[in-house]
Image (cartoon, rainbow, N blue to C red; front, side, top):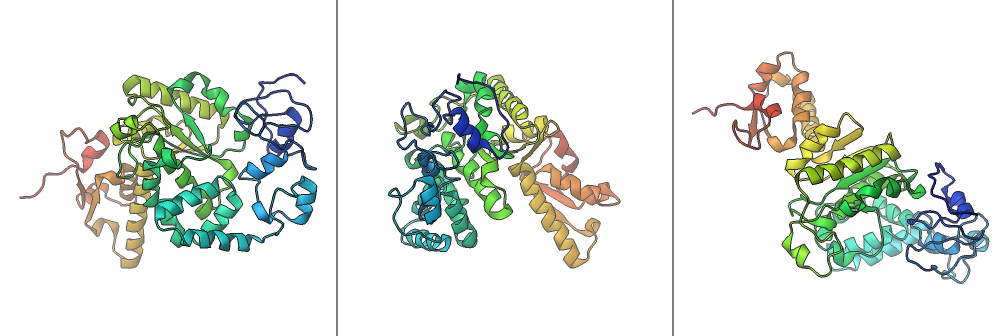
Length: 392
């Protein structure tokens, strides 16, 4: 068999294609004899290359977080997949695995320690990770996402263990199409992308921003039931202005000053075009971009693909939903409310509110926006209609 560079749309049969073509995940197609498969992206064999009855290598079954079940592999599965001797003899139920991991979590002293354990579990056994998260949602959401994810982003380089998602930077600009065309991403339906410049209230975290993309997509699965195999966290690593990160010898990101201006826009444009080419119907969420880029990028691409910015539109949706729920409870007409809102909650929510009232101009007189002034750089044309003179 000759080496191949062609993109294949495999649907649910990626595993069979991987076996038949001898795909080395992450590095393209290479000719290998039947029954052998690369599962390590380094230049060496992982170890176990014999395959089970369905053509998947033993090693991949144990290291792929979407396939690995740990001690929950049944005796029949261990027979069929050649797993005897590679796992402890006890066959565990998922409930037992959840209890074991929960006990280990509870024994840890800090939430950052718990965050690190959960990230390691997510990268090794996603079935168990999401079972544990879904059954302990109230307790673990603050660990998987805010506020603990902030510390996870700050310590991302120290906590990094295994590849997860895509790290794309200017050195990849001319090969973005090739990277995204890897068949392992054929099933992707939802992408969360960040450039790491405005991570929560922590500022520029560079490559550490990947923690936000991973964490947000974990919520997609745990709270909305989105299949993890269809999600893809992305870090647009365009550098950082964080002096501590640049000086840190353990920092694993692109060690450059952050791209600005035309260079930044050209790279983002190349990324969006590659996304459109690879997944015409994908959902692309922009997450934790600095204010100077967040709304600008949303306005540029919102009509070109299915995309939204959580910080601009998500906050606006929550604020608007809260207001509409209050109207149902109070029975008051929208035009009769006096509404004060931060400008950071986005314009989309305000547009929705004012479209629903018979006299929008009258309703605007009841809305006060904090932080919007004529002549200020932060003020945009779409907000000027809300600017008012403060009464003496």
